[in-house]
Length: 242
Image 1 (cartoon, rainbow, N blue to C red):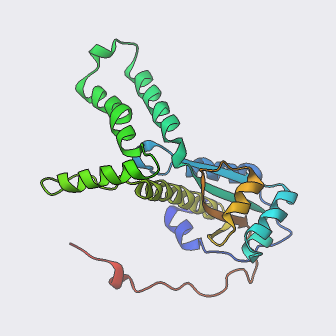
Image 2 (image 1 turned 90 degrees about the horizontal axis):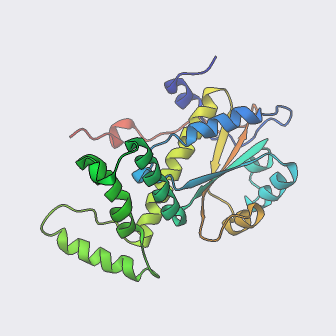
């Protein structure tokens, strides 16, 4: 029986050692990845990709790229979450096409004010934020927006580094959706940041401008797979009611 959201969150742990004799169902893992892409994402640009690794030879190479960590070495499968800020033009266009289709077969001059706003968001605002040239344009926009911000509230995170953070936040949200979905069906995961990302990209033939968000080991937890009891800073220290 599938766990509730709360049960899955409480069950999920970063499992460092997986059982060797219990295989995962590829289709169930794939379904969890379908849940991943339902995560919230900035401007609905969905600047992510997911590499689902089941091939034994590739898993062996990935273990080395993940610095020999047990969570990679014993994993039955791996999922690599990739941030694709470089795909913003394609994803914006996909949103535009979707919007036009949802508006129905009518002349653009008949679009409502709200429909025009939605299209302008992807046709004008997104390009103004994401377009950059060697980081120079991003800094120029940053300075201009900082000045405007002296007089009224305005979005100021417009540098290339800012947009990278945005893409990685969305990818991280999707990764969490995946891991909670895995926990809900009794599968275990371990998100790993410790990896040679250059090697990972070469192994999987990931494009140059894509960025590795995390590598996730997948399997069924071994009896000694969790290294200790869960520790969290007291909730009262992080909860601020305003």
